[in-house]
Image (cartoon, rainbow, N blue to C red; front, side, top):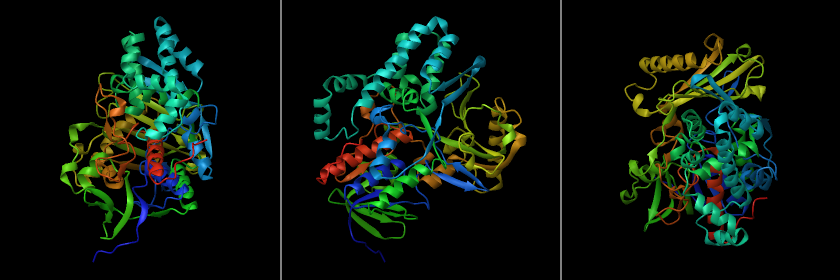
Amino acid sequence: MTSTTSSTDVIVIGSGIGGLTAAALLQERGISTLVLEKNRYPGGSCSSFERDGYRFDAGASVFYGFGANGSSGTLNLHTRIFRKLGVEVRTIPDPVQIHYHLPNGFTIAAGYDRKAFLEALCSKFPHEAYGIKNFYSELDEVYDILSSLPAGSLEDVTHLLSVGGRYPLKTVSLALKTFLSMGKRARRYLRDEELLHFIDIEAYSWAVQNAMATPLVNAGICLADRHFGGINYPVGGSGAIPAALCKGFEKFGGMLRYQAEVTEILLENGEARGVRLADGSEHFAKIVISNATIWDTFNRLVPDVRHRVENDRFLQAPSWFQLFLGVDASVIPAGFDVHHILVDDWKSYDTLGGTIYFSSPTILDPSLAPKGKHIVHAFVTDKVESWQHCKRGSGDYRAAKDEMAAAIIARTERILPGLSKAIEVKVLATPLTHQRYLNRHEGSYGPLLKAGQNVLQKPQNKTPIKNLFLTGDSTFPGQGVIAVTYSGVSCASYIARKFGKPLDELV
């Protein structure tokens, strides 16, 4: 028999970072909010799990947004949000965003020190020095505009009028830059093909697209803020971020229910009225926020087929094959950087498995592993179709995982000789794992813009269904922890004003 509960102001489906951010900020304004999470833990792909004394990052490990005031303007959203919630997340500065290991023996560390990074790049391409400095200066200009504008919803007319009135020139300049791609701007200044490949991998490292398909605005955040706010790793691992958001949310009276899987968004007269859970219970609210992907929201949770989102509306980002390894500390040499990207051949860097992403967060936070041990987290792009011939948990499935892991480890030994013999704990995850645990359409990293699409064509928080909102990587500005955090702020800002309790500016 279906049971019902008393209504609340807002229901949030999923405790990913976008959903938790929106929930915490709304609850702080006195807007009663309920978060429903399928798993036993919060955070989605920005979470941690423990195995045999190791605490692994489930996904993200490169974090922006923790800069001090004055070093990254309003882009230091984590700093400002946690200050507003009255909770603390201790972090450790990481001097290098990514150390690249590329074809033809080209290696370079993209670090916090902007001058050192540009000098290293210019020394590799001295004939392109003028263009390099001009291209990266253009990214700085975008960053400068973004960092001076207060965060808020692009669908909130009051917010837009306020920002436009206070910063008219920067607002117009930013609007014009939304039509530009990172790749096209790079080709305005640069000609060397190998250097343009590097610009592509700078985009691909976080956008999973080449520079031509990457909006200049997004690049201005990720490739400029590393030199201002910098990269900072949360003490205790990535799970510290959702844990702090939950603490702030519950501090102001918010309710978070685990093992509460939403199976349907309830509609009445074309409006979202609540949700139904897997146990049959129904929960009602004035507003529903979905932190699921746009495909999961409209093709799985919304019963009205008129709102279906076709798969080809956006590019579908790949999923991941991940290796979580506990290793003897002796395999990590002194002075080794935390984050690395390995590319063997430029012809295949953007194909499935072509680029290896690699990190060892215990270099910064040894508490994540037993004494004398390190964590190695390596992953490559993959897709569900590659694994559908296997039954999850079967011998064939385990054998296929081990075979793929061995190939990735062998490639990684290019920078970590002896890695295969140093492994003491091994946990492997396929796209099927991501699909199962994260409830994501085909385990995908989310929808991507097609080349030539304006960044503002990314879905915003409002949807065609009244009182149903989206947050997370399906919405503007896109993928990445700091991007979905912005999405959560934007969503909360719009909804709070609807309730007549507008957010205070994050300071």
